[in-house]
Amino acid sequence: MKNNSRRNFLKKITIGTLSAPLTKISAFSNHNAGQKQIKSGKMYYRRLGRTDMFISEISLGASPLPDWALLMQAIERGVNYIDTSHTYSNGNSERQIGKLFKEFGRDKLYVGTKFHLRRNWSEKTIIQSTEDSLKRLQSDYIDVLLIHGAEEKKNITDERVLSAFDKLKTAGKIRFQGLSCHSNHKNVIETAVDNGHYDMVLLGYNVFDIEDKQEKIETYDDYLGESGLRSLISRAAEKDVGIIAMKTLKIGSKRQNLENYKTGTTSIFQAMLKWVLENKNITSACTEMLNQTQLDEDLAVPGQSLTKNEKRTLFKYVAENGEDFCHMCGQCQTQCPSGIATTDIMRFLAYYEGYNKTNRAKKEYTRLNPEQTGKECKNCGQCESICPYNVAVRERINYAHSLLANG
Image (cartoon, rainbow, N blue to C red; front, side, top):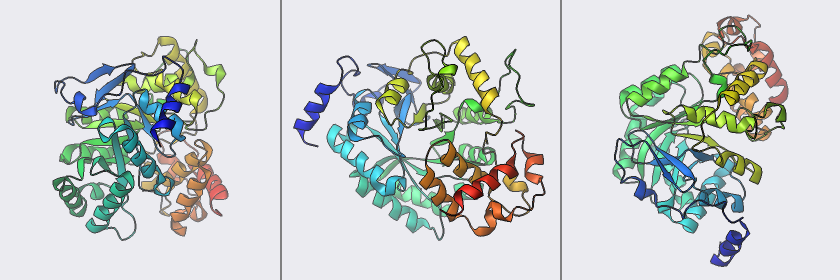
């Protein structure tokens, strides 16, 4: 974008909406290692585990990115971390971020991107994927390189993965390493935290992981008490492994009109983000911001505390809407005698229903082998007998098959 167009863009932004002039991210690293939160302009920043990176309390998910003008505004208003992947928008997400680096300067932004362990992957394919990401990002280095969707302990400790990380770090092409986790959280996160090779974890964490009881609100049996995510996050903090929360808004980019869950001037979405950030072991709440309303809504949250009334509203919302919410614990998948990928299917169904990512949901579903889909369900009920949240698993995977099977 030419300088002219950038000046014109900035003139259109309402006076007073921007934070202080953009701060070089290197300036944050001068703070004492024991300091965990700082403020610059209207944005608050938290240190990401053992790294020297102070990340904005609200960070930007790039699947998809907002349009260019909104994307620039998010950065101007203090967002300094973008989570992406080589697969997001067929690589165009990384290309857009590369343009941002050119526009604002590489020293103003952090980026985390990912590689997959699919099909015949190897150390060589990991390195090649990273090299390709660097070209699209137009950058000499990546701040955090993550395994995309680590679901098995063996992948985290695989020598090919660790060797690829080491070679890329030695070459100065990555600074830190991490992983994203969609399921089997306990095994995956405990392994990642304890083996010392990982600096951060991108973890699905939202208000449906509430574990506290709340008086006068009736909930289903064993109300989210089996989630266990709080203890895993605390364990990570003890080892100084950073946590960025993803999937922070259960409804995702398809934000429905939920005025009946509004508390004063606070929307349910703002309350959800406040709840995530109330956990001081969480560095940042990563979310998509696809229009001006969402951007303004989310960027009003940093530095704000969750009130008692807002918390009560959240409990009410979860109690009334959480019956079929899958926590991706993976227990149903481990018990399925047919080997159906129940946890993956639940996640793809969430993409379809909650995040309005219909094409992505269908594409991911078609990647499954035929024997891993709901088509092969024997209706034995093992999945539901083991589910700690009483989700109607069979009904949900059969419904997903009807929606997603034929692309």
